[in-house]
Length: 401
Image 1 (cartoon, rainbow, N blue to C red):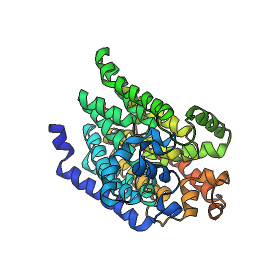
Image 2: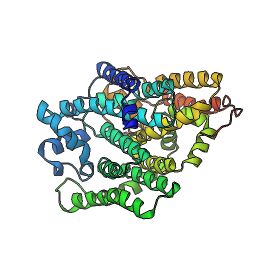
Image 3: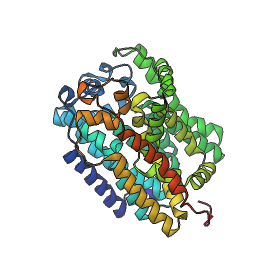
């Protein structure tokens, strides 16, 4: 109860409201996709699942029923799938901010670090701009579910943890990483094996069970061949430009936060050695992004809970000068990489958010524009930034996180 009250403290509510204001501001400036009357591409499948039943999507979208189910009351109220998803995205944004704040609180973040992290995240493409431009996607809802599930695991409330991990596993394929996080955390804390199995086995069963339902019960479109899809995406790593984009989005999907942590990799690595469960979360999500094809950052954005926790820990040891330089540089890099209040057109949607589709000539004609030299400068700037910051990271202050 004490932790619940702290999660809903006045300062947390105020910061979450500020996040919601930033989220709303992106709606005023970003614009809205016009493809299929605002449904977009995948969104048309989620709209069908919302209006006609969970078995009316593709075999892949049907693996993610939770957010669609959560959005149904909004659809009953609005009568329109685009408006329903858009309305629920505001609720997810507020809940996500509160969940991230509660996680940072547990790791000793100051109020200013909390404000900085939330303000950074809620001007990013993943957390604000994409849901504003393309609302009928389940991504923001899934990030929220994963964050709340991680918070439940850290709080160690067994029944809640079991339910949260099952819900997470049914929200997005990669979200089974939450259960992996919990297993490793319990092993580190020497929790009895029977308790570990009882807590997390239902999530793994649900993760496998939804695949059986999609394959043999529901009549979705296409084939459920995710192994083949992943295998085909491994060939993309033969292209240096794809590899460079992966590193770029890995560092920038959460604005400047990833670059700040890369610039102080020594302290971040020490924290991960002390709590290896975060590696059990980071590695599967990163691998999902690595083999997720041109839309890699939609997977990588789920790293946000881990990044804010690491920021909370490592920033406690920053001397004043390093704190000023790091946070200032992070803000500049966030503005540079996210372009937070620029209007989005179909061309800029692909050029700035999904450039590898442009490189593959797999975009509408209006978006088939040269990527260079602008992407060359972006890649160079982001590659050099952590090295420049690392020169500022002083090892003078050494204390356990």
